Length: 268
Image (cartoon, rainbow, N blue to C red; front, side):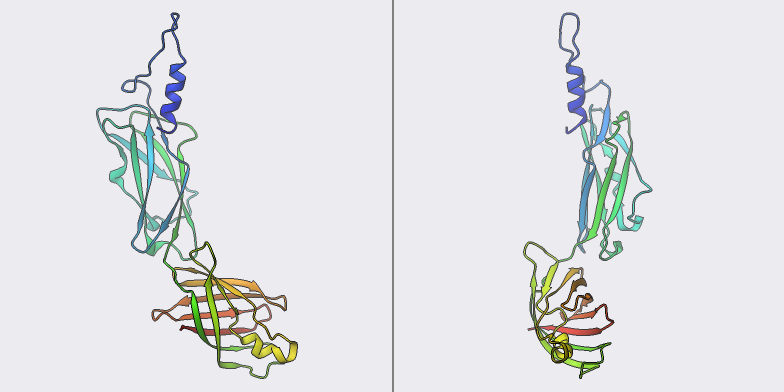
């Protein structure tokens, strides 16, 4: 028992009679306190779904099942469709000190690129008093998808510059090869050897000396790509994209000057 049983035993064990006889706490008939075992948790939700187990503790046992009552706090950002609370789990079985609230995440309903929160309040446990300060729990939910995009890609880009210097403007079906590598220690973060897939070099090498690559980056959240970086002109480049059913990537970018391009990335 994490909290309440320890507290109950400590407080009652310190009570003594005039003869200094130790008072033994009665786990069957003593005062019953209840609490949530933790105050926060995370639930990554893959396509097949996943479930979080939230323990509820009580300081006494009973010969009958005891109902657990919870409510969703208004501060929750998760919509009701994003999760399911198993009503059959809202019970502390007879003879037990613990119950478990089962919360399942619904993959299709959780927004992309977003973490939402479910805030639960422990309203009551039948026959017990809810311990003050141990009655609220926050669960963070987000989509979790496998990602394996590292490799060598041939990119075919088309785009348009707002600058008057580039010769090939608009640019059509420009070919370039990049390396995409996964950031060490991460599952979803990637680096592109040249974030604009050679387009800057075609447009700006001759007029401005931009004859080199600048790394870009993106994060893959369930086939939705997003990222940003600052290039050598000092402008922020924003990237968006997607993983296509055939395994190619479609990536678009725009810089602070209004230059834009879209490329199809084909893995070699």
